[in-house]
Length: 283
Image 1 (cartoon, one colour):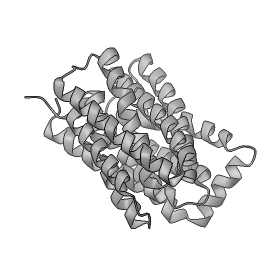
Image 2 (image 1 turned 90 degrees about the vertical axis):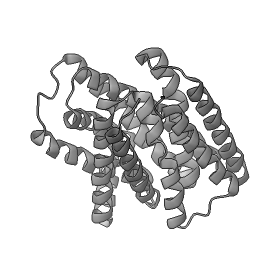
Image 3 (image 1 turned 120 degrees about the horizontal axis):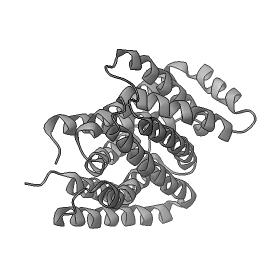
Image 4 (image 1 turned 60 degrees about the vertical axis):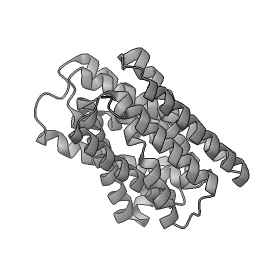
């Protein structure tokens, strides 16, 4: 079950998420640009922490989960950037977000005790059909390597969502949780770029400071809205509804010059429909 306020927060978060992904896709060095976005998002989240009420991590478990989330975030930003280097935005985004639903939903049921319903099972079937349609489009476009990286990104997405939910269950403060997570992810992301990692990130920021700063702020807003929504609803519900962002991503892909094939559009719509069926409140 999800209330109106968390629902609106999740949907707005979904739009913002698709927006910064579209900005990242336009960068030539997507890996360095992804770390630049991560750095700006980390600074933005850290600036919000003093404005938040309550202790950052009243329980040690909350901080431990933040560290785990940060490791998963580093994997997410890295694999997402690699996916965008080798596949169109619409294809990579749909696989990453749709795949995360497939991964996180059974984990939410088994680990966090969320209910299994007939509607949820139908949603899972529809979602899998959508991923299959995207897979056919991927073969036609020869983007299998990029989509494979998007699949790894999906696992990272599912993992950090579950870590965030567990941290919030330990009374972690959302802004502090996100800031701590990105503080862990940032040095990992830079190290994964190699010996010239910091120089590559700096070059991206110098070349397009306003674009990447804006993307980082939007990314931070998207994630913070997600965490606020997670406080008031189950992880499976929030993640599935947030992944309706695949529809926004298709529109933004068109805006940056991509022309999605019919199977890609059908697949994205099926993924969004499956997400809604999985996450929509019962009764």
